[in-house]
Length: 310
Ligand code: MLT
Ligand code: MN
Image 1: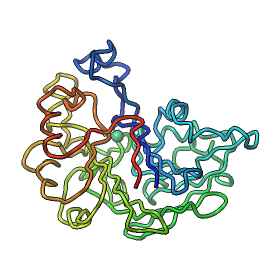
Image 2 (image 1 turned 180 degrees about the horizontal axis):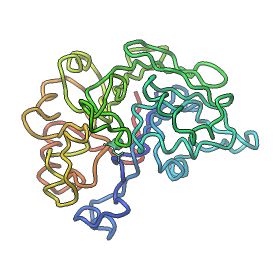
Image 3 (image 1 turned 90 degrees about the horizontal axis):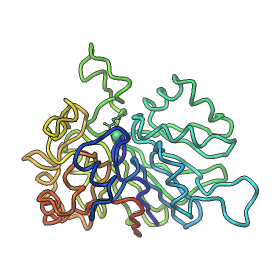
Image 4 (image 1 turned 120 degrees about the vertical axis):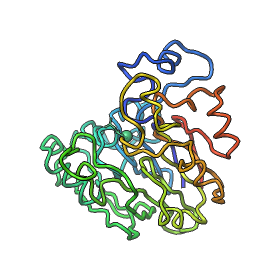
């Protein structure tokens, strides 16, 4: 299985269009060690020819332009794409807005939970993806399903599981508990090759807490791509760029006693990689103490164009 990290940033990207804080300024001015990052997305293929996108970022056009494998094959039909399916892990803007760039009457299969499919159905702009060409398929929680494109199986299986999280920002209802969050609003995925279930990875770009079911599920996992939005919970207020904590946004901090570093420190994963990194996160600066801390704990900081082969 071939994996490409198409976008390693959280919503807003890096630099974010309106951000003038230290890290965004540093990457904009070309400071050594800083790399720009597009918004959260992953691509996977079992055969190197047919590809599945995991999340469709607002930067999808740039991501396809940077990834020859996702472009129409040189000697193929006049209109074609190796992207055979798109799988969504939540309905946040950074994960669904790219769908709008995938119009143009191209066939592919769109997978999401019932909650996320409902959001797409209720926002009529997504009808630009004609359901006759882009059938919607529900991701059943807790079941393993083979992914299919318009012409049949793609050689990848996925298991979808609910993780602690939050409903999409634009759907928050302040009058309800948890802003109206329900199971299936945020999910993690176990992605494996259909003919060899042992080669697998976990993709969890948004997660508010590591609970016992998640710890049990990750036991024995090989590769984990995990929510690296913020290093400290109060990082955005501390940087003076906003009031929200990581917890308020539905993202578990990397540091702290309940953070991802501490919670996963004894987990025998062969690779642990942070993705969905916010523009305030000090792991974006490779010389920072935070970067050293995550490296010493065995984590890698994902970057755009990062390739993994399982
Ligand atoms: C998030 O991950 O918290 C969202 O992408 C926020 C947003 O929609 O900007
Ligand atoms: Mn996001």
